Image 1 (tube, rainbow, N blue to C red):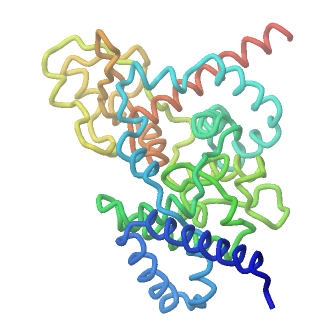
Image 2: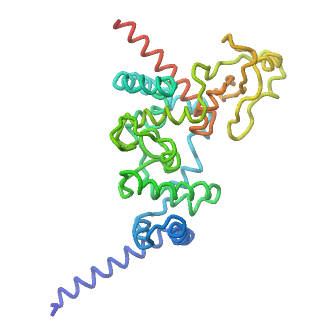
Image 3: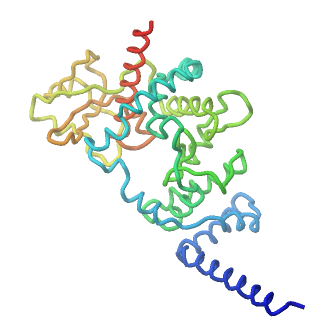
Length: 341
């Protein structure tokens, strides 16, 4: 028999449990909970997931208003003169050189196999996660469920990514209870969304695993593989600063919400008063891009390889940050090599 004190303690424990369960239910919007339940049914039918096990996993997930808020105010929405210093900074240049020096053999191997310049690989990882130092603060499961079930603008995309994530968990050594990433559910040092992880991640060091969270070799090789698979043209230019000397250039400005494959030739740009210092074949296709430099406008021509970088993140400012950081790292490394050489 329980004493009165024991019964009182048991009642308090039960009340506390009910309060916690109630708070958890209130934290997850009804649409979120309904979406989770429907998703469990779909995954069981489509991929043969055991419902009880999947329900136990999904019970760990929580709705995150912070994820929704972050989606509504992405870094790429900032004007270029504010966005650029966030990524093309003295710290990232310095750490980029150090990262390159530390992993020079891996980068040389990736460049040899996939044809992607080392500086582009380094800068991509630098922009994404500060060379693996910060891989995101959101539990990936929370971010993906929140966006899949309560973000109508891109629900379909993130439902697919959540599906890919659950499949990824069954394929790779990833712990859903601890794995954190970006507010959009991107994972690891190169920040691959789950679908990209499954499609483009590679085991670059031959240890039998594709580990983008802890293995720098796999991160380097996977970035190179990603760009190669998206059509990187070895030896071709990426971008060049442009000078406007005519009034017809506006018809060639890239105005699409998402970057498009370049179709206008340098010859056509020249006819419209757009000039570049680089001597390239006038048949080279390019896009004219305008950046908000604060008190002025900044103009660049983006070539096909620039477009390939936008396949990693569909934004011209992102691609330009990667490109400019890559050139700063390359120049700094050359200068240091010459100094010590």
